[in-house]
Length: 285
Length: 305
Image (cartoon, rainbow over all chains, first blue to last red; front, side):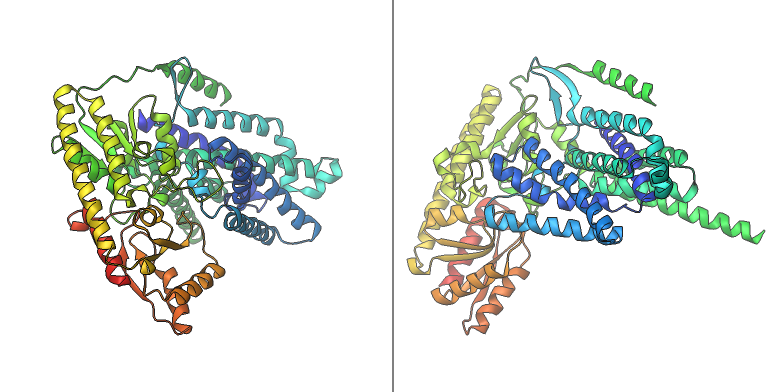
C-alpha cells in the first residue's frame, strides 16, 4: 500500500509538473521552478513573524505569495528593461533569497527557520501523513488529495486555455495582432506555476519538483514538435520516472526523491542517445 | 483523462475506512527513535528483547535529515515512535504529531515543564531543542519515556521497563554529579564555551558556562562577517584559550575565528571535537549518551584549563 501511495503522489505531481514544464521550456523559462524554490524564503520569514508559528498553513500562504511575486518581478525586469529571461530570473531569485537571509539574521536568528525545515515535504512521508476526519474516517494520505485536486485544476486550466496558451507561447506578435491578451496568459500561466510549485514543495520536496518541471518535458522536446504530443509524452516520462524511481529507491534503500530525479535524468539520457544513434544511421544510409 | 481522474477519486473515497482505535499493545516489538541519544535511552529502558531502531546515525545533523525508503518501512512497522520534539526534527516532527492518531508516539521534550525550556527569542514555540546537554533534564526526559512505555505495555513488561528506567536515570544522575565535579575544576571566569552552532544552551545553564556560538540554533542559517569579528573580539577580550568544533557541523567556520584571533595576537586553539547533535560511532564509548557527555566534558575542561 505504501508503494502505491508514493507512486500515485509521485505520478500526480509528475504530471502536473510535466504539463506546466512543457510550456516553461517552450517559453525559455525552465529555471523558474528553481528560482521559486529559493525566492519563497522571505515569504516564509514574514509569515512566521506575523503568525509566530511554524505550522504548514501560514508557511504555505507566505510562500505562495512570494512565488507569485517572483514571477511578476521576473516579467517586469524582462519586459521593462529588455533583459534576457535567464538573467532576469537570476537577478530576481538571488535578490529575494538574500532578503530572506537578511530577515532571518535580523529577526529570527535563534529560530530554526528555513525552507528545508518548515516548508519542504518529503515524498517518503506521504503514506504516514494521513487525512483523518473528525469523525475518525481515514481518507488516505493528505497529499494524494492535494495533488489530485491540483492536477484537476491544471487540466481544467490547460483545457480551457489551450488556444491562448498555445498562441502566446509560440508567436507573441501574432497573438497581439489577433488581440489576444499576451500579458493575461503569461500571468495566468505564471500564477499556475507558482501555485503548483509551492504546493508540490510542501508535498514532496523541492529538488524533485524542480527536476520534474524540467527533465520530462525536455525529454519529450527531443522527440516531438507537436505541443499536444509533448504534453502527453512528458506526462508519460514523468510517470515512468516516479515508478522507476520508487523501485530504484527500494533497491538501494536511498532517498526516494533523489531516485525519481535520477531516473528522470536517465530517461532523458537514453532518449537523447537513441536519437543520436538513429540520426547517425539515417545519415549513413 | 478527466473521467479517469474522477474514477480514481472515487476509488480513493472507497479505500478510506474507519480508523481503528489504537489499543494498548500488549507486546511492544519494535520501537523507532529519531536521534542516537533517544535510541540509547530507549535501549536501556526496554532491554535486549525489544528491537530499537535509530533513524539518525552517527554524525548526522538532525536539522538536515532526509528519510530513506527503509526508514519509511521502519516507521510504518514500529509499535512506538520516540522523538525529541521542539522542532529538532523539522518537518518530520509535524508528521509525527499527525501520526499520533494511529500510533503510539512519545515526545521526549514533554518530560520537561514549560519553564525548563530555553527560549532565546520573543516568539512562543521557538524553544531550543537541544535538551540532552543538561544531564539532569535529560534524566527527566528519560523518566518520561520510561513511564509512557510502561503504560503502553503489559504488566510483566511494564515492571521491567520501570526498573530499567529507574536504574538508568540513577546512572544519569550520577553522571550529572560527576559532570558537576569535573566542571568545578575550572574557575568560573574560565567557563566560556565557544562552539560552531548554538547547541549548548542547556549545558551552559546547567553547569554555569557562558555559551557563545557562531551560528544560530539552526545549522542552515548563515553566519555573517560581523558575527565572526564580534566573536574574535570577545575571545581576545576574555582571553579564552580554546574554541570547539562539533561532530555534525563543518569546522571551517571556526577556523576563520581562530585566524582572526591570531591576527590580533591572541593564541586560541581548537580544543577538540564535541558531540552535539549526533553521538559517536556505535562501537565506541562516545557512541553512548553517557560516553558522549563524558567525552564532551573532558574535552571542554582540558581545553579551557
